Length: 132
Length: 132
DNA sequence: TTTTACTTGCAAATGATTTGCATTTGAGAT
DNA sequence: ATCTCAAATGCAAATCATTTGCAAGTAAAA
Image (cartoon, rainbow over all chains, first blue to last red; front, side, top):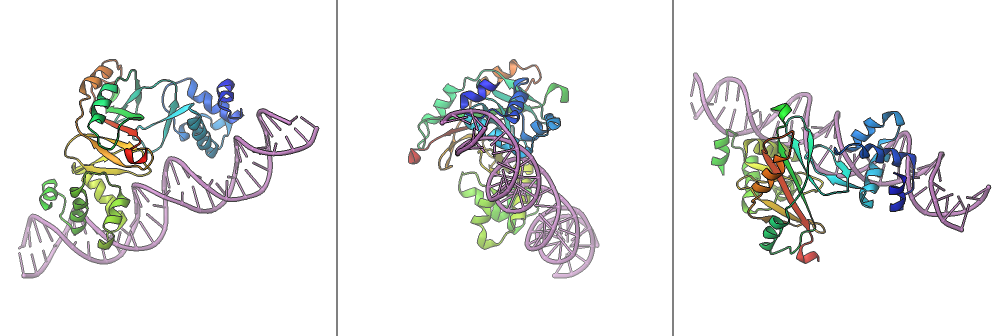
């Protein structure tokens, strides 16, 4: 835990360790508010959480995920993958594997303004079994 | 123009016609603020624009597009397509064609919580030729 | 242990979007 | 053509997520 932080040059502080820990257990993306709730006993200011998320993202520890919800979500930045989100209850599942390179290059080959793709976001929406 | 509105059961009002017209010319997604600027001489309240965008979306005239910008963007909901967005200047280009069905069903087949996909969002990011 | 820059907390600001409410206006009924 | 009423509009104010300013606290290098 601490080593991850040291590697990035970020100072090792209690708040950062706690925030990083909330991501380690599970694979579900978390918002600042989610983290605040999970750590409410630890009494970490919401502002600190926002700032920590921003520095973790800049350091490459976290990655933003766009779930089409009101707020911003983050997840550990280890491996590239996508999600499927339930339109009714908001449940998020990770979908392993992404093999969009061919599709991507096919689409970009027709573009007159871009020649390379640096990143992409792909999310699926449906209704989970529990809700349907 | 008016017929599109009548078809949906929405009342035909000057504001709605003007807002719908701002979408017709071009294919670039627009935010409420964009529309407000384009129609500034017409003196349409920003609140009306927000409300109109919401009802147009509900009526299926417009669709939200997620460009990973600060605000919400909309575009005409006619045909399904994706976008590539410049990370530097924010320029947006439409990418025609989307043939993600196979990939989608391959990914979902591994899911234990979902069995069908109702929708998806796929956006690409890069640096446009002008900016690079 | 001293120094110094990086972090944190609290309060207040911001910016996009929404809501309440009184007024106006389409559009169907008269 | 006029009346009626629900729907649409404008303005002010509220909301909500996120950001910023600033003074105080604290890791970590010297």
